[in-house]
Length: 193
Image: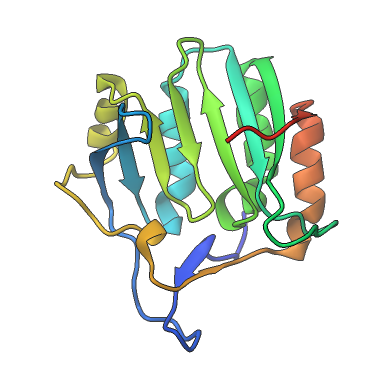
């Protein structure tokens, strides 16, 4: 596997670790469109396992959006929009193999967001901080979380709420990023907010 740590760590204003660890919990919230989504937090040791279980609940074929928020190979100007790479009609097995092959990139590197949607447009999003979002609030996602021992709470502080997030971008993952895009035959499309 990998000995890399989490995508993001919480630090003090001086850049020193502040001891915050993501809780094992999930809660509901309204997304910007007014729909309800599930917000899921787990430490890095459980992120891969839970992410794959949630993805297994999606009905294939799958759609993938790999949103590169930091381009390590060709840094652009500050504030440049992310680069979006999309794949459609992908068999779930192909997606799971590609994710496992790029494990250190997917679950340990903060350069991207990964949006994976099923046939009914249900989706699981892994953000740059290691927080998972499930759309819509569906019993199938709740069942996966319950079976995985992730408790429901009213609200929780996740890594996305850190006052001073320190995001990790590992040069060793540059090739894995290109490999993931190639393995899924993702095509670059204009970025949409």
